[in-house]
Image (tube, rainbow, N blue to C red):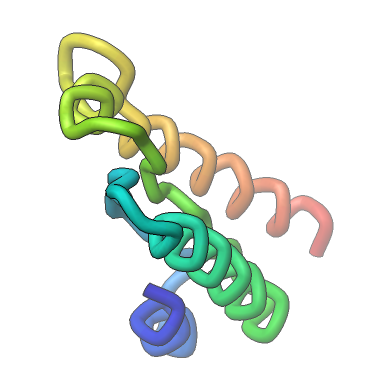
Length: 95
């Protein structure tokens, strides 16, 4: 995710939304993937000066992930889109 976010952020875009899901398994790999994804995405944002949002679901089960991404329940992807628009607008206002 951080590499793709960097590639996109270096194009003529106002911002990037990183979407995905990491579902906890039986090993500590979940923690590493979540931490490093968040860290890398944050670095891209700071390096490019563009909003790069962490829209990665980190859940215990597939059912939780589906619930958080559904049209009928929470929709974290939609939330990220609105947040990006607000950040782009705020950056424009600051100058």
